[in-house]
Length: 73
Image (cartoon, rainbow, N blue to C red; front, side, top):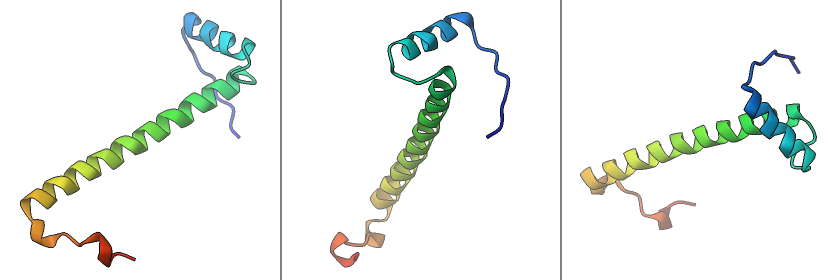
Protein backbone atom coordinates (compact mmCIF):
# COMPACT_ATOMS: atom_id res chain seq x y z
CA UNK A 1 0.00 0.00 0.00
CA UNK A 2 1.01 3.59 -0.56
CA UNK A 3 0.41 6.25 2.05
CA UNK A 4 -1.06 9.55 0.84
CA UNK A 5 -1.82 12.80 2.59
CA UNK A 6 -5.41 13.95 2.24
CA UNK A 7 -7.01 17.25 3.16
CA UNK A 8 -10.66 16.84 4.15
CA UNK A 9 -13.13 19.35 5.58
CA UNK A 10 -13.38 19.08 9.36
CA UNK A 11 -17.09 18.20 9.29
CA UNK A 12 -16.35 15.24 7.00
CA UNK A 13 -13.66 13.99 9.39
CA UNK A 14 -16.09 14.33 12.30
CA UNK A 15 -18.66 12.27 10.40
CA UNK A 16 -16.08 9.58 9.60
CA UNK A 17 -14.99 9.55 13.25
CA UNK A 18 -18.63 9.13 14.27
CA UNK A 19 -18.95 6.12 11.94
CA UNK A 20 -15.77 4.64 13.41
CA UNK A 21 -17.01 5.17 16.98
CA UNK A 22 -20.28 3.43 16.08
CA UNK A 23 -18.34 0.47 14.70
CA UNK A 24 -19.28 0.93 11.07
CA UNK A 25 -15.57 1.06 10.19
CA UNK A 26 -12.39 -0.02 11.99
CA UNK A 27 -10.58 3.25 11.29
CA UNK A 28 -10.61 6.46 9.26
CA UNK A 29 -8.44 4.71 6.71
CA UNK A 30 -10.89 1.81 6.44
CA UNK A 31 -13.78 4.24 5.96
CA UNK A 32 -12.00 6.20 3.23
CA UNK A 33 -10.91 3.03 1.40
CA UNK A 34 -14.50 1.74 1.53
CA UNK A 35 -15.89 5.03 0.25
CA UNK A 36 -13.43 4.96 -2.67
CA UNK A 37 -14.34 1.34 -3.47
CA UNK A 38 -18.05 2.23 -3.46
CA UNK A 39 -17.37 5.16 -5.79
CA UNK A 40 -15.45 2.87 -8.17
CA UNK A 41 -18.35 0.40 -8.16
CA UNK A 42 -20.81 3.23 -8.85
CA UNK A 43 -18.75 4.34 -11.84
CA UNK A 44 -18.68 0.76 -13.20
CA UNK A 45 -22.47 0.62 -12.80
CA UNK A 46 -22.84 3.91 -14.69
CA UNK A 47 -20.69 2.59 -17.54
CA UNK A 48 -22.72 -0.62 -17.66
CA UNK A 49 -25.95 1.39 -17.74
CA UNK A 50 -24.61 3.53 -20.63
CA UNK A 51 -23.75 0.34 -22.51
CA UNK A 52 -27.25 -1.05 -21.93
CA UNK A 53 -28.85 2.18 -23.14
CA UNK A 54 -26.69 2.05 -26.27
CA UNK A 55 -27.55 -1.59 -26.91
CA UNK A 56 -31.25 -0.84 -26.40
CA UNK A 57 -30.98 1.94 -28.97
CA UNK A 58 -29.28 -0.47 -31.39
CA UNK A 59 -32.01 -3.06 -30.79
CA UNK A 60 -34.74 -0.54 -31.61
CA UNK A 61 -32.95 0.71 -34.72
CA UNK A 62 -31.87 -2.72 -36.02
CA UNK A 63 -34.01 -5.46 -34.50
CA UNK A 64 -32.81 -7.90 -37.16
CA UNK A 65 -29.38 -8.12 -35.51
CA UNK A 66 -30.77 -9.36 -32.19
CA UNK A 67 -29.78 -12.87 -31.12
CA UNK A 68 -32.49 -14.85 -29.30
CA UNK A 69 -31.45 -15.74 -25.76
CA UNK A 70 -32.21 -19.39 -26.49
CA UNK A 71 -29.25 -19.43 -28.91
CA UNK A 72 -26.78 -18.28 -26.26
CA UNK A 73 -25.16 -21.04 -24.23
